[in-house]
Length: 130
Image (cartoon, rainbow, N blue to C red; front, side, top):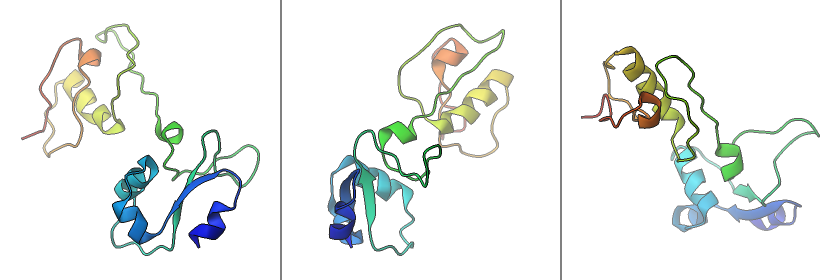
C-alpha cells in the first residue's frame, strides 16, 4: 500500500501503522498527534513541499500533516489590545484562554491553551492550568 502511494506525484513520505509509531519524520509526528489510536488504517501519507491534496483546482482537503496547512493566522482587535504583529508560535487552543483573560472570566474547567501575553499587553500565568 505505501509503495503504491509513494508512486504518486506530490507524495513525500508514506507510513504504515508500524512505521508511523516509530518514525521521527515531522509528518509522522503530526499524524500520531492527529489519529486516534483506535482508528484502523492501512497507510498515511505526507505531501511534498508545495503540494496539497485536492479533488480539483480550487479546493484543498484538510488532514494533511504539512506545516503550511496547519498554520492558522490569529488576530485580536480591540481598544484594550496593544497594536502589533508577533511571529512567535501560538496555538489555536490559546484563543479561548486569551479571550477569557481579556473579559476577566475564569474558565470553570482546565484548558489546553494559555493566554497570549502579547494580546494582554503583559506576561500572564495560564488561566485554568493547575
